Image 1 (cartoon, rainbow, N blue to C red):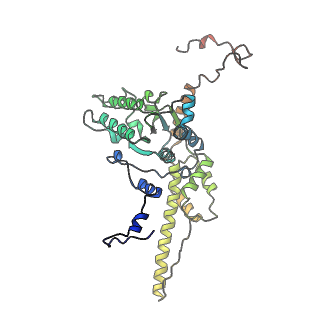
Image 2: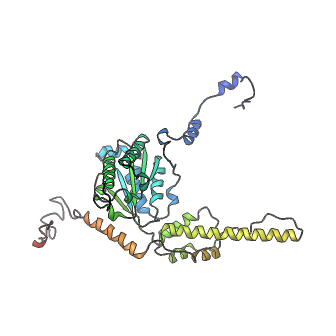
Image 3: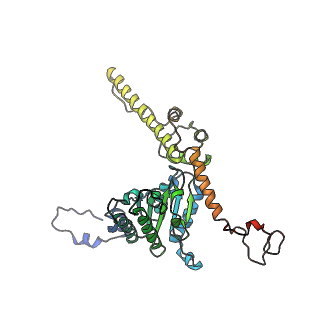
Length: 371
């Protein structure tokens, strides 16, 4: 197509006849426009992908089943009469990728992403905190499909009656409003709620019951293979020397979170930048003193083992062993409380009632489950 000179008073008819709007124009416009319903709040267009998150393969698959499948295969859910889950609760030690997972699933589903930190909804004025909760959910419904992410959920969803010094009951009213709003979202609204917390033990049990944030996903500290994946993800854009053994770093960082490992990589990059600048300044000074022309040369072309060794001197764990035991005990408690139907079988099947060992007598002490 001929270029149009905007300074000309008229445009040739042949050029006008060739003008037409094609799909590429709409694609460009779609990427540069934001939904009007989201203009009053901070909206982050997530660009995080699964490749950006090292490890957590089981968690990724569970999220795909819970969030992505209803969007991509709605006919399957209609066929089997299943209502998609309304929400997911991430819990576990800090720095293990809960926020990144929420951004990645929103990106994979091509959905709008609204991130809210719990304390942002709380105000000193009577009734305004509940109004803020209603407004956030209204914006999410208007912007569907939308992933609504609540970070630090424990700050606004504490167990009712546990807020010491809360004479006006503001905390209880906020959690009541959240429960009401979560009940109002679902498959028809195309809004998916994700909560993240480091303190699952203080959450109101009602928010974790089936039909609300019923998918409880434990995000543990990364194991050895996951630590290698995290290191590779953190260094995917950095030039790394061939003799740098990431496996050795992973073995030496048992108990480190994903944020701790990322900090090690960032500090190694910082060491390389510092060394590169210092060597570049010294080289320019020496060449100027010798009256030679300064040549473009990269004194530090990549991250070396020395950079990582220096970085490891400052490495520290942000999660203690006591914290890990606390999270594992909570996860074990949840698993135990939801495992009473594990031995169920229909009558007449192999291993059902009547077969040896299937209907073993129960001790009298175990007859009353509520004692």
